[in-house]
Length: 107
Image 1 (tube, rainbow, N blue to C red):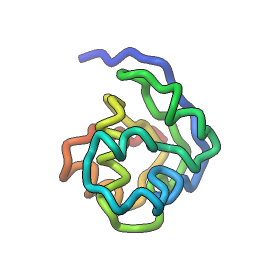
Image 2: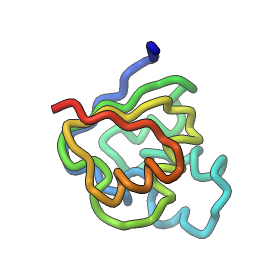
Image 3: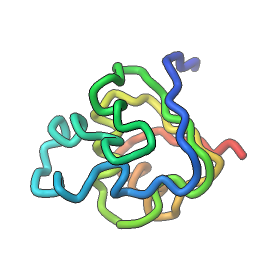
């Protein structure tokens, strides 16, 4: 299986508040969450400029912070087919698997 898409590169320790800011946690609509994915990250333009099929590439400890499933849901429904990182925070890792978001550790 091959996945092709534009790559968005993020650094280390991208936390769940950067992935989906707490101000949007009053909704559980995955499509609404997707509109705000990565809005408080080092690439806030991701929320408006990403295209379905774009890939997230990150450093160490991606998804650290809160245990909420909103973070991987926002990424999945934004059309990201896979997140590749040096490492994932354990709770994000489990939540991603639980909701069917493909993740790959590539140290």
